[in-house]
Amino acid sequence: MYYVKNPILPGFCPDPSICRVGGDYYLAVSSFSYFPGVPLFHSKDLAHWEQIGNVLERASQLPLAGSGHSQGIYAPTIRYYDGTFYMITTNVSAGGNFIVTAANPAGPWSDPYWLGEEAQGIDPSLFFDDDGTCYYIGTRPNQKGVRYNGDWEIWVQQLDLSVMRLVGDSKKVWKGAGHHVIWPEGPHLYKKDGYYYLMHAEGGTADNHAVAIARSKELWGPYEGCPNNPIFTHRHLGAEYPITAVGHGDLVADENDNWYMVMLGSRRCGGHVNTGRDTYLAKVTWENGWPVVNKGIGRLEELVELPGEAVYLMPEEKSWHFYRDELPKCFLTLRGREQIYSLMPSEGRLRLYTAADSLKDCGTPAYVAVRQQEYEYRVAALMEFTQGADHEEAGIAVLCDEKNHMRLVKRYRNGEPEVLLMLYEKGKERALASQKVAEGRLELNMVCHGQKSDWYVVQENGATICLAAGVDMRMLSTECTGGFTGCTLGMYASANGKTEQHYADFFWFCCEEIR
Image (tube, rainbow, N blue to C red; front, side, top):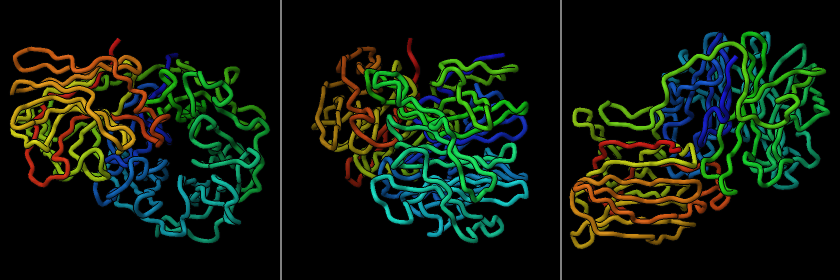
């Protein structure tokens, strides 16, 4: 036996969907307005995961122009049938629901098959019945009229894979378990022991999030709810419990018919969530024809004991030098990445161009980032930025959304270099600290302990400046900002709306947990 540490995917990995092919597990999560879209992970043991790619890597697959931070790609589902991988999801900013396919989950994936106006709503999933017939299952507004906010329903329709179109009639199959239930979402269909099981999330994706399930002998219903619904939630554990918003699950069985659920949840720190929604794992047993999640425990475990032997992978990189001709798979940009950077592997440089777009815009700023995964961490970069005009800047940033971020940047004022710590909160900007610096390379650092951060600059001559200490990070939490993503941490350059363009060179970047 061995142990899985929760969360299995920490930091902004929401709406997980999982499938197994032989002894291999594949897991996809939401990406919203970040590019590339739908990161895809692989594991042999459910404990150790490697990002093998991103499903949506091309502009033709992922139109995101003008999308808000919490728009874009919602809730993917990954499935495998008869030699083909299928990923279905919603682009709420452009086009709606679509499918892409691949023979190899590491890619390349096809261009989208757009399902059109017939595929209403969000959070689509696919189910392959025993005879190979494929069905679309999703959630949409109540077709009899929306009576209150979140008055939606779950519906099913056959999908013809030969033309990638919905065919026949659609049918509402379930509303949810609760009275006046809100936001039934993330539905999945399964078949086990002669029953069709319909599992979904409800209660909204915040503290009242929950997983519920129903079953039927017939795919089209009627479906009866589990008498124990919701089958999993943390909403009864109180406002101070460290993991909240648990829900949006997907089921998978191993080769020995041991069952598991992946789901999202959020880790609080100081009563606030900055890391977004993580992916967790729980064990599932079956009693009287119904799934029981973490039997006898009823909540997520920090360590999950699994049978068999672990299959270890190389540890994930936390420090990057730029001697490769492509960015690591874990790196993110916003809404695209055309003309915002160049890699110079022979010199070990990532060059960011001072694009007109900034982090305040719903455009494509020169921002290359990773997800914030922990609350005790250091993010740092070695940068050279020497030719900027007064309106240009370059440095590092902690980004929640287009209205909320912090950045430690170098600027020029009347030709003299300085560093500034800037807070952009609820669409309003102010400087928290500033300091003149010497010319040359700068090592930019932010060290975070819980919800307090210290900001340092190390000059080329070795002199260290503590620009600010004890800066409160709670203003970048989802409790303060709203939205569906967590924070990202990255390298940044901008001309702040101006057209002339220079560049900043980054020689290394790190984001590492500290003890």
